[in-house]
Image: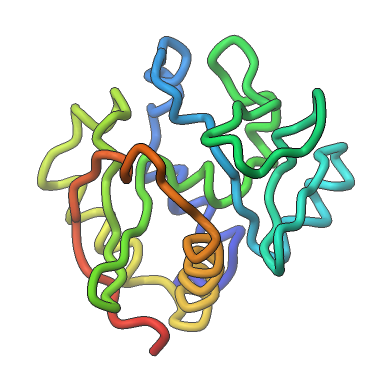
Length: 178
């Protein structure tokens, strides 16, 4: 059973092993946008020198280290990405650890999706979907609900002026709020 964030981080690192090879040569803007945080991620990141931005009740890595805060900017660059790699890789939040996995919600049903604009995603196959589904099925229900509730709070703030990212539904998680 995956009971806490550290265990989820470790399971995602195994599931997504090898992804950083694709990241170093990536030209897509996937490491852009508002990087949401689980509540328990805020303090360790702040202590590591990462500025935190709060919008309503949701917390994000502050992408506006240079210049004024403007939450109307669509997909601001992550200030922690350097030369195609994450400079806070060991401390990166769940949002980053999940990628290219993400969530979508249709008709009250939350799904796990695979972002199709990630070069690493293109090499994934049916066994990856099964492994991802197995990982989520091993999550403690309370942890899964906290992750989905955090994502839903951020999703309710989000707008997509150019439409949603291209993604493929992998499997449903369930109806939320449950």
